[in-house]
Length: 124
Image (tube, rainbow, N blue to C red):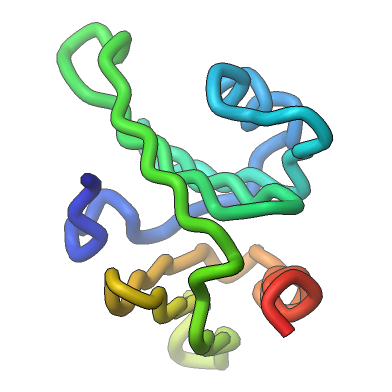
């Protein structure tokens, strides 16, 4: 399981959906599509129409990967914090039944309200 308190999940920036699909291809099920993809230095977070997939790239070569699947059906609450004048980063917090809080921090250029809307569509 990925340690979500690790700073490597901070400062996610949006990347092309196709890049996310390449990383998640081994895990995607029939009818599942990647809606948006975000990347830090090596790791990636994908939002699909069924779940959040967190990809932790490990090792020197990056061939070893830890995939954590976070289904929307287990989300009990979520919080979206937009960026401001002095604080240009935004944050998404999700509370999962049986897991607790998972937080992702995004760069100021990310559309956090659109991410929040996407989460709401699948959770509510």
